[in-house]
Length: 301
Image (cartoon, rainbow, N blue to C red; front, side, top):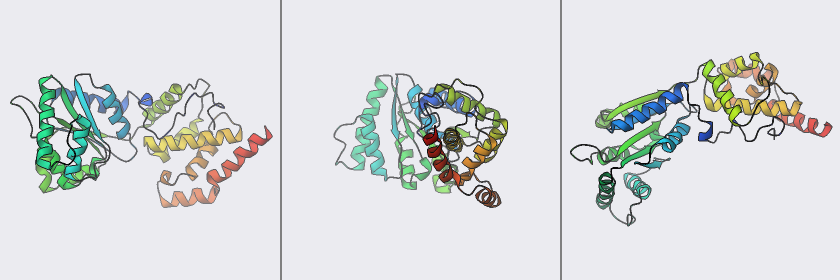
């Protein structure tokens, strides 16, 4: 809707994890470097945790795109599956043939044979699991047993777990302590501080082709940081809505008033119920009103 208006060649604040917009600084850079060091180390499990919306999936995809050619990667985005389905998914990712219709023992044998083939070809194998907090306990245990496969010198497969803080709670359970002890590297993705948030926004705008003057009034940035709480997904949602409002009103800068409207239309941007009540009372229409304004402005222009 607003791309041509702001001279953008692509949407800068889409919720789709596009690695072209990966910010190679702040917590994202530190997390990626931790992953790279851990892979070089070649031992045990690697764990990346962070609150909802902090960029774990984008980091995972960036990592998968960044590893060298001597590393074979596999990716499971939805691990809320049984142990056998996990093995089938891994077998498919590794290119194992004749895996369908066999029992778990045979699956282990087929996967082991494939991993040994890669090892003999001097290739490391990395399994990345997103949303790992959703993995059933028995599937986590099956995963631990899978990593028992090793030579005298190294593991045949490394596992990277990406998950919400609930993953830490799950691994703290006594019956999962063996897996917990296998975690050799871990990193927690923190929320962005204000300076990193501004770099994050600027980077995305530049990558989308934006080259005009200051897009945000300082007061709008202050509100954005306060109500996004430094969470990248919320930042994306609020800036996207603010751009729609700017377009609808025919303005070129996101003002404090425009950011307030974007906040009023975004339920998760409220910090407390009192603030939610205030915004709904003071700015009752949200983007429903903004949509009408956008249509009206285009009809008049």
